[in-house]
Length: 149
Image 1: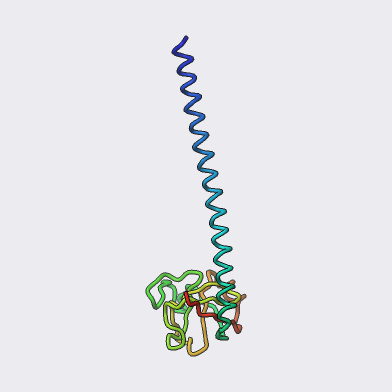
Image 2: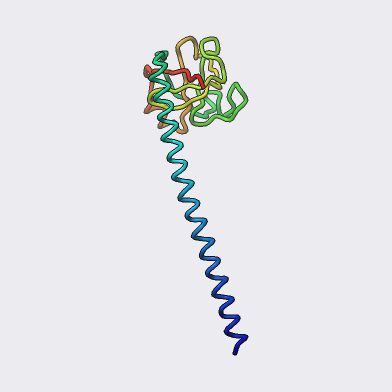
């Protein structure tokens, strides 16, 4: 009888430890998500502060591109050798050097990592995930801030 009670108590202890570990993991995940949200908020505040401290921007004519065979981008590799993704933009490297970090109103953070045949002077081409998104963006003037950090 004692063996059964001891076994039962041991199993209850193991279950309680398991529950505690799961709760700890859940609390850690919640804390991490809150930290990420705080970091995003801090990052956005830094961007706003940097833009307000450095109000200089370039107005550029923006278009959008996607991975497509007809555009010659179906492999999705940029001029810099990276895979295209949201935030990849094509620029004229004589105007904005490749690797430059940018903030583009209406698009967000970006890195100048690609070039294009028609991208000259004050033209910029923003990568979009879908053709629909690219067509909805269309062609428009955007403010392009060159980030110093």
